[in-house]
Amino acid sequence: MPEGHTLRKLADDLTAAFAGRRVRVTSPQGRFAADAALLDGSRVIGADSAGKHLFLELEGERFVHVHLGLIGQLDVHADIGGGLGAVPDPVGAVRLRLVTLPDADAGAESGAGPRPPAYADLRGAIVCDLVGPARRAEVIERLGPDPLRPDADPDRAWRRISASQRPIGDLLMDQKVLAGVGNVYRAEVLFRHRIHPLRPGNTLRVGQWRAMWDDLVELMAEGVRTGRIDTVRPEHTPEAMGREPRKDDHGGEVYVYRRTSLPCLVCGTPVLTGELVGRNTFWCPRCQPKFRSRALRSPTKGTGRSGGARR
Image (cartoon, rainbow, N blue to C red; front, side, top):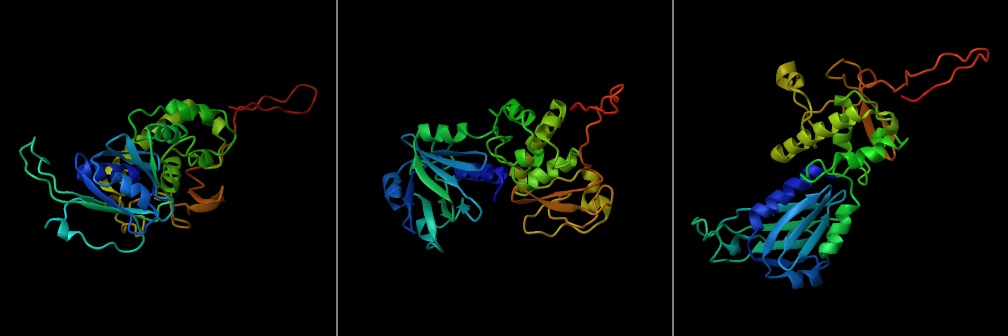
């Protein structure tokens, strides 16, 4: 499933291609036809993302709410050249198609002249709905903070993490706790901070959480810029280590994600994998040892027993 950086990049690409322009809105597949007819000819205001949700805003406070799910795909073609005739026929089950309409005023204020035509096709999304401001706000409100949003409050996530005995590897993937983080960023941020994925959330210190949050903000912003997930530090890149670049359909250089049984780039220990709440998780058993509280009380005098206190 696409992670948050992919949705943020799509939002930016949609805004760049369509903001301020009127669009032809159709549903070649037919499943969005009624709503497409209501939007046809409208001007696009822009697009935004929250976690793994995308919102395309059109005039009249109307939003197309999209969630790509596991197989969804949104292709944005920002400069096709040659006028509207250059837009190809739809291929496959296109749920939603946007095509810019000729607009004599486009670019007039900047003196740049008319902008080149653009189009976008949405396929396979699990959600494609026309909603209003209230529904949009409702969707965003039920999400945890998104590291890519300037209005995000990491303390909201910390309150839930610090009160939960669930594994931190589970909590990081819970979109109600933290929005936009998927399997790759989950595995990688835990490795970078030497935290085992099964460590209970309420055993973390607030400083550990804030360090992970700040790391996610930086890593995911880089993912928006490059369109791929790179999490290795400069000293562990292929060039620095003299190793072959990673070959994987997800792209990017990573420490543990999908590197089962391969040597850890830091210590050489084989990377492990296991299932956590229905998803594979990856970790290095040496760099991310199992958590054991060291705040043990001394044996109680005369009882022969010892007690423990959680750190």
